Amino acid sequence: MRAFPFIVLTALAFAGLTASGATDHGEWTLSPSDLPGRIQFSITASGEGGQHWNSSSTWNASDFRGLDSSTPGKHDVHFTIARDAGAIECDGFLKGGEGAGLFAFKPNPQYGAEMNSLGLAGFTPDRQFAFALHDVSLSFARDMKAHGIEGLEADKLIAFRIHGVSSEFVKSLDRLGYSHLDADKLIAFRIHGVSPEFIQGLQKLGYSRLEPDQLIAFRIHGVSPEFVTELQRLGYARPDANELVALRIHGVTPDYIQQLRSRGVHNLTLQQLVALRIHGIN
Image 1: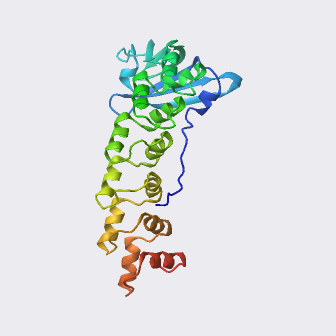
Image 2 (image 1 turned 45 degrees about the horizontal axis):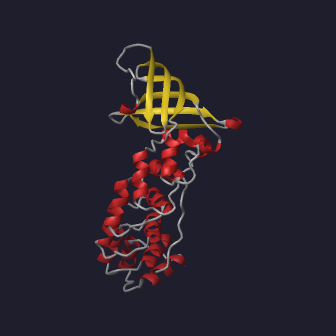
Image 3 (image 1 turned 45 degrees about the vertical axis):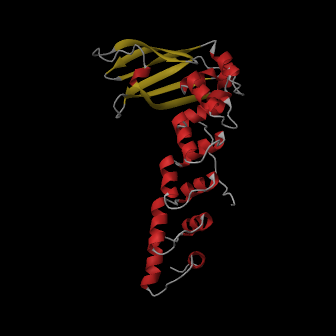
């Protein structure tokens, strides 16, 4: 079966950080989040060569060890974000749930040796802060390594954490027949929304042997289980993967088919429907 080309978006959120050399200090701000048990946390730092980067996202409140948010009014705070890769020590002030200050990163000297013992290529000490920032724990690294994922390098673990490639996600794909996907495919699945639920929906409709690239193409172009179900209801029992993508690319929708039928145009093949759309026949 022909594989579809697809776009793999790389995880660039940490590119400036990893390229700019060791990072050991910077600034932080925090504010309340609309999500229960979460805090909006931002950090800004500089690396060697005058490069700057920043990161902002919601974190678990439990990540901030020692953060005192109960004292009213403006007050000094000190808290620690402890990771396997090292500790982010933060000092500053807090008022009304909002705060700012400075941080210093203290790397764990044993972390690099543990990572190297796992055979994960690409780890260097000057990138250690990125592994702490994205909480690439040693247990997470061991779990991913145990899955036998091809192309798994140290930086891919950061991309896994950014995009939500977890051990359970990999296991769910294994159970559905997608075992031993390489690291880039797993990242692409998460970026484009190829979830176990999406795959199961297609398998129930008879699409049990789609290639990984085809699943990604389906998500990119909007081929959903609902779309396939509507086509089946209109009499197109099981279009192949290429036809489904072509229909979406050229705008052949169930509504379009029904409009043609209301004008007396019946029994068209999917290829004929695509041809009509290509030639602008609405």
